[in-house]
Structure formats: structure tokens, C-alpha cells
Amino acid sequence: MSKAAEFPFQIVRSRVFGLIQRPTILATMCGPRGASEALFLLDSGADISLVSHSFGQQLGLTCQGALRGACRGVGPGLVEYQICPVQLRVQHIQLRVRVGWCLTDEFPFLLGRLDVFDQLDIEFRQSANSILLRPAATGTRG
Image 1: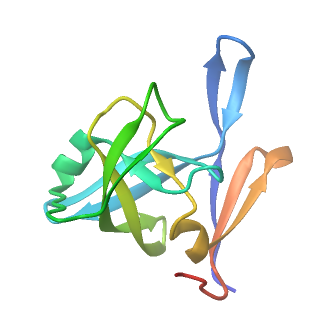
Image 2: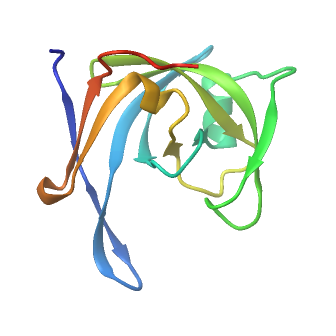
């Protein structure tokens, strides 16, 4: 079995609940101008992974003629994005995923189900305050 990548939950302060723990992953995304690390919230409720406009510009993303979409739930109002294929590295695990390159910078970076959850076996270890990732035994990518 492949070696697992483990990430501790990130401790953040909530105005309502005090200290809470969020499932976050440090990942490297690669684009035409190079690679950059970012902290992503692993979100099983998100259909697609999202990155900010400035982060996509830094990587040199270009999406001429790309599919466009919009989503709710990551900030105020609709967040518009373009679909871009990228390479994503999570420690030793390499993934090819489609991300929504947003037209704004006003939300957290997300790793959603599309492509990411197809290529990884993900274990949310709430009692251990961590996430365990392994390359999926069989891909279900569509």
C-alpha cells in the first residue's frame, strides 16, 4: 500500500464557538509560470476546488475558452470561476485536477470533490484531529 500523507487540523478562532479545528492541507499547485504552495480547506461539501484570482495569475493560469461557472457558499453572493486543469502535489502524491480559477480573492482556497476525491482515499480522523490521504486504489475519474 502507498505511503499515506497526514495533516493535522488547523486550529482557528471562531467568534461563536471559540477555538475550532478545520481539515486543511498544504498543497503545491503547478502552472505555466511555476509552482506555489497554499493551504486548502478539504471540503467534502464543495463540488469543485477553488483558487483565488491572484493565485492563478501568479501560477500563470490561462483559460481561454474555458468552461465558466459560479457557486455559492464560500463568500458573499456568487463566486464566478473558470475551469483550469492543473497539477497538484500533496506531499508525495501527484494529482491532475480541474480547479475553479475565481475572478475574486475574497474566499478560502478549497479542495472539493471533483477529481480530488476520485484520486484519493481520504480519512477524516476527527478524534486524532488529522486527515489521512492515500492515492486511491482504483480511480473513478469521470
